Image (cartoon, rainbow, N blue to C red):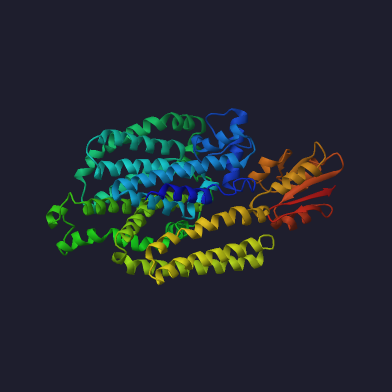
Length: 546
């Protein structure tokens, strides 16, 4: 494994650092975070996140720390905030590698980092959701401390627990209650299934919760005092408290669908890795048919054996995987990066499976064959969907066709390698869909489709076309990228007919911006047909003479 750090660095360069400055801020989450951070810096606000001068109770103030630091270093630049989020993502990869090395061996640790780094959700979160990157990093610092206390050396347990609860306190401060509490659900689930209730007393959960509450209370208490019940009702759903609520039936389906998409291409290997992790668990239960699982000593197994210690840690990570999916059901309308806390556990399970592949390829040959075949089939379906989208989108058709070809070829490459008997190579080739697909997206697809991702073109046209003191009237709340890029006064019209007269510029025109779907409403409310100045897929710039 001498070249493992070099290979991981190359993967990070492709996945996290390619094309950082090729496009401007992207709506909605990235641009909204940058807009809030700019107001925090300019207004020197230290307590309440603000957007347009109004309180935005979406996530804690510390959740905007990376964006605020980037705005302080280089105002208006998306590149610096993306670099900071990429650095946080690298820290998460190194933490995952450390956990894997501690419990499964050094090779498994590096494999776990590679699996996580080549999953779809990580580069997506690094581009759009820095708060979730931090929440996952701190949450897994807590899980690492719990795992060390349960399965690691007994010496220094208090120090490891202090680090664990410190990490969970940081998750509570920067992301909210759910990102900080799901590790406790993982511990409880593991204790229930593995009959470790007595052993969990050594985790000192009561003092740990007190420590977390003491760290978080100053900000939460001040916000309750300032905003009252409105803050209390939203705080439980941080960091996605302002998203529209999805139907409850759809919310129940989100965890599994997010896991399949966010962990692609490794979601094809996850079922086999989970079954592989449960081998000893099933063996313990089969020792006494119809009875609860006996303890290892009761089943005639050596509790100190390396294999059994690894199996116990794998069971803990399996419980953490399930627990990390629970907040997705509770959030109002979570985006895909909300699945990120579950992915380190999934990566660790896959890493143990692949580590056994490198030890003895024949041991898991049948399972690997199923994995690469499933990846080939799902990759083919994904490539077809991307190719169909290319036929409907003129601007990014060439880039979408390139992406479809990459997904198709890289999804079949592991199957072909396995078919000729190169099973270890097949496992390594599973990194290619994201390792090559991400640069294709960031360097080719996103620049070609920037008009779909933000409103920078409309903002620049507004600054060049409107008279010096003219106001831009909007039918709906302005997109965050319009707030970031335009230098004009923005007004949301309660009544369009009234706004056309109240906000007329010195040249006699009233300037409007609206979504393409609202064009018919604007035409119906205007005294004269609106003159279209610029039309984009996200926003239309027009003017009307009263």
